[in-house]
Image (cartoon, rainbow over all chains, first blue to last red; front, top):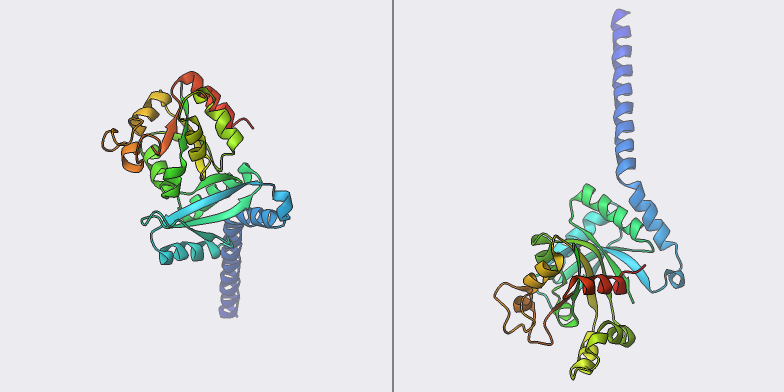
Length: 131
Length: 133
């Protein structure tokens, strides 16, 4: 009987601990990612004609090869960030720019850039594009 | 004054030196407070270079500045106007000291890669011109 009681206590403790781990993991992920996702959705839901001719985009990296740039895009994709590659033909050393987003406000873009920097370590910056 | 206006001109942008020049700026202790990439309109270019209106090179200058995109930055550093002009080097890229931005990325006196305010008063005006929102 005592053996069974110990087994039940041990099992409950393991389950409880697992629950805590899951809770911790979810909280950590929630803290680290949602703002990025929410901002993305907000931007993508805006009809193009409402985006006027001015927007903010984040330059995440600039790489010499397409493969290197693609690696960065894959990493960003894992965080639900649909980044794109912009070719810069004139500069062989930094031929492929990896950029993300088309934000209507500088604050949103800066906040996301900060998140990307904190989470992924890229030294990104926000460019305002006026067409 | 702590701020000055810097422009990466069409020739350097066309050659893809945006990142190189930004890096030089940051490595030399400047903060980039605001920045944007834009195609200057004819009207904007004429208005920005208003003081050169009577000079023989005015039309050529306007044509050059509107030929491709520019990257405009508000820079911050102690004595920013002088510090940025030192980092840019002489107006003529052919005469600029080795290691300066104009020597590294410019071609000659007109295609000289960057612009910098020439005084604190003009820095104030030029920053207002591009970043007044």
